Structures are given as C-alpha cells and as structure tokens.
Length: 86
Image 1 (cartoon, rainbow, N blue to C red):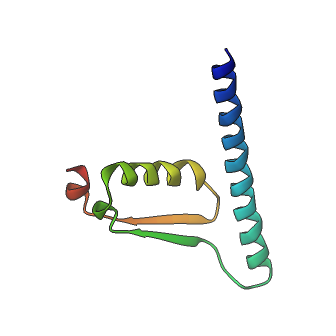
Image 2: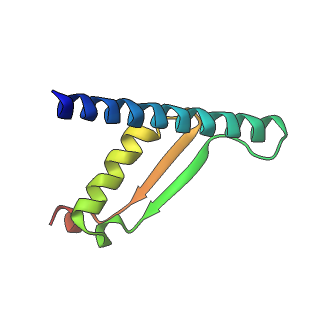
C-alpha cells in the first residue's frame, strides 16, 4: 500500500508540473503577442527523428502529444517514416 501510494503521489506531482509548464508557455506566448514581439502560432520543428534511438523517438513523440497540447503551438515533425518504423 505504501509503494502504491508513493506512485500515486509521484504521478500527481508529474501531472501538476505538466499543467504548470503548459500554463507558463501559454502565459509567455500571450505576453509576447500582447507586446507585438511574436505572432501565433509558434512552430516547433523536430527534424530527423528517424536518426534517434527508437525508444527515444517514441518517448519524444509521447511527450509532444501530452505536454504540448497548448493552443497556439504547432509541431512539425520531419522524419523518414519507413526508417523510423524499422
């Protein structure tokens, strides 16, 4: 029970950190846009993902999916899908 409780607490902390990170990105983008220093959307380019270890590539894609669902942020992933699937 103690181990399970610890895992739940760690998951709650991770979720809180992700939420705070997303909110910080949204606030930063809003601040930049309000001062005319940027226009939306903000693009994040991920290139040559197929050259990474498969476990890293999958972890990166999962992170992008879960962490960066922020409005005004677009991801462009460049990869050789055939090579990545190998």
